[in-house]
Length: 202
Image (cartoon, rainbow, N blue to C red):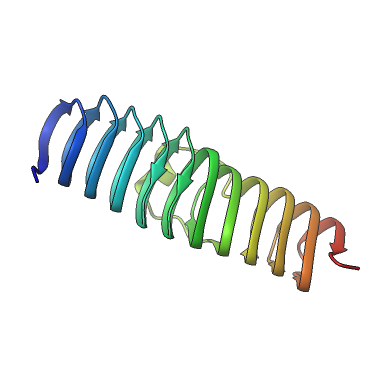
């Protein structure tokens, strides 16, 4: 199968590839399907992306949906569609307009980031100290903003959410949650604010 390697400033019409590597500044103008996708730099992906594994270091605008088995992101991503994977590991700032779902989701943020919906098996979202250059270039409150979270196991901190739902839920420091629903256990940090808590099945 043909591979694609973009080095420098260039663009591609997309298509089906084995390994895709972007080192520099690139635009993919249509849908992209590949075995692995590695991005080091700045990229704009204008169509849906389907890959087994994505590893991103830098910034990316993705206008469609992203589907992967393993997703590792270090940087800033503006994702306008849905994000579905088996495992998601993010350090940086991701704005996802659609739904993000995975069996395991690890979020580490040093600046503000926003999601519409997060769902799946396990979610762990922690604030980390700044240090990424993007934290200097993009000034946002260092908080996680989500409309709804629905996972089996949930840990969040410095989070603003309309609704958090899960079996085992831990609301960490400085959270502001309107509604928490849980079926097995609930822990709330003393510095967090939860307007309403409800045990399901009662």
